[in-house]
Length: 306
View 1 (tube, rainbow, N blue to C red):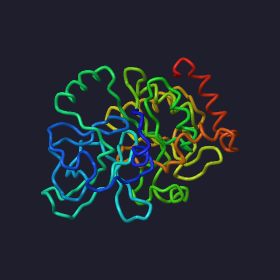
View 2: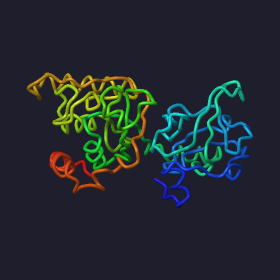
View 3: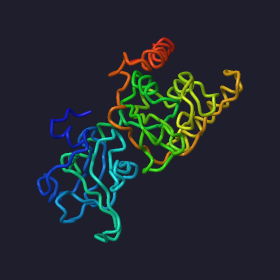
View 4: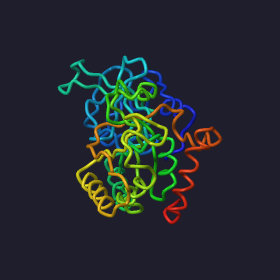
C-alpha cells in the first residue's frame, strides 16, 4: 500500500472531494492506465476517458472487476470505490447521454496515479511473480474473521464489508436486521504463490462452525451465515471439493451448511469496522469472543503466520 498525504487520506479514506477543475488528470489525455493511488490496482484505461466538462476526470467504462459501487448513506448517489482496497474514487452517473455507453465515472484525480503504456507494461513484467487474487468469505462477525486472515503470510489486505444483497442495503444497521440478504464478509486480497486458495479454505473451515445455519455462537441471523462467494469457477470447485472432503472424513458431527455462491459485488463496511480488533482489543466482545478465536487460530496455523 502507498503512503498517503493528509489530503489523499481525506479524499480516499474519508470520502472527501477535491475542488473541481483542480485535479492533475482533469484535462489529461496521454495513452496509458489510471491506477488506484492507495493500492496501485489498475482502474481505467485511457480510452475510457472522455471530456465531460464537469470539473473532474470522467470515464465511461472501467477495467472489469476494478470498481465497486454502493449507495451513499443518503441514498442519493452511487459511490465508486477501488475493489482492491476500498479507497474512495468518486461517483458514477447514468442517463446523461454524454457517450454511447451512457455512463460517467466522475473520479477525483487525487484518488489515482497514471502510468504510461511503457510503465504499465514494465509493471506487469515486474509483477509476474507477485500477482494477487481475491476471495470473499462470510464466517460470522467480520471483526473475528478480519483479524484471523490478516495474520496469514501471503495475505495483502482484508476488508470487512457486505455481500449478497443490494447496494442500497449495504449499511451496518440494516444488515444487522437480518433482512437485507447481505452477509458480513471479508474481502481478501492474497498472493497465490505464497498462500493458496485451498489453504485459505482450510483456515476458513477451521476458524468458524460451518454446521450452524445462520448462526455463529450468540450471533444469530442470515447475516452471520457461512458462505464462500466464489470469484471464479476454480474457487467454486475448490470450495465444493473441500466440503466433500470434510464431510467424507467426518470432520464435523453435524452436516456442513456452508453456501457456495457466485461473487457479485463487495460493499466495504463503514470505516470504524476496519481493523476493529486491532484497535479495540479490550472491548468486551473482542476480549471474550474475538481474542480466543484468534489465539486458537494462531496456535493451529503457526507456520503460516506473517
